[in-house]
Image (cartoon, rainbow, N blue to C red; front, top):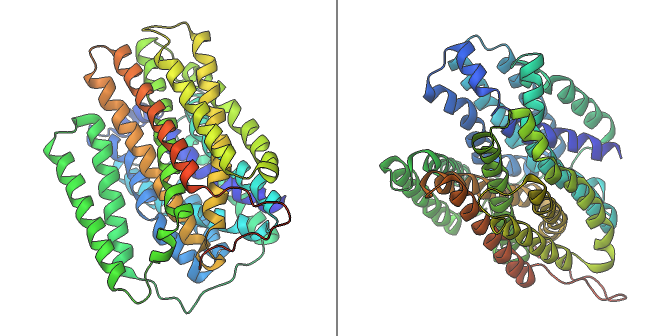
Length: 454
């Protein structure tokens, strides 16, 4: 239980800091006299570095040991959080947020790899992955609620100070109760490939974020997306030529790896697009405060923990494919229900769609995570974790960007919201189809399990 608590504490901090800052930004801007550009970088700089360096964090974990890199990330993240809380100016806060994002990129790949090492038995591993996955939904959706409470009572600096005791406890628990990880010291780090990944993900995330503000036809957005495509091409070329590629082609060719990563991208696209657009809808259309908005989104949050427990227990009997497929279909039903609820539905009519979406996403996350991690050899656990989480981060950024664009360009706010929910429902349906094709069925009882590639 101790390894699970340590890893989940670190992961919770990382995801919480993606959303908790949103309600504090207006106050931060006034206190530090930040420009609009500065405010945007306070919010987005963290996400850009976090998403961009995930693959590098995974590669370092495989080479140097996942526990060592995870603990290093916790230290960097915690110290950067302290720097954010003490920031005397907007520029200082932006730099501290960038460093915080680097710490997050070191934490997340190692977190899944450490759980895989700590829980080798499949049923226990599925339960652990389920709880790990539920942390994302809880942290992301609880961020506005917790941020609203802290800003309105203790002040915005406590949005960052809250990470200090959590980080210290996570580090102590990891060092004392999590076993040291094996190292692959002989594996060379392919720095050109790593730089291409950083450039591609950072440029893509930046382009998607700006698309939500500027529109998809803006020159800066088009330039960012075009440069991201060039970086992807450079990465692919480098991987074909490298003697020791950062991401071995045989792993990418495995449908359980690449296809399930695409499933993760799609359900993050749908879920975080829903959370973003619903937050704006409740605040701008209905006039809710940040605190009340967090409470309004609570049905989606509450279901994530319950779903992960149920999914982890069922996977031993059913395998992962039925759980991922049914979760995606339930998420599609939830968002389709919201889209069909009308222009300005009463709040009770939205509770069931939010519960279905939260439950379905968390229900599927357990199985998809276990599928990706079980399809690679242990020596590539950090890299596989990084690939899966990078895909999910890209999905989140795309969902937020497209949701913002639909809200801005719709004939009215309600029409844009319903269009966003409909697109999210289609993404869930596509994820269900991919899960049927890519998530392996449960092995027959009494028959040996097929060995993973590599």
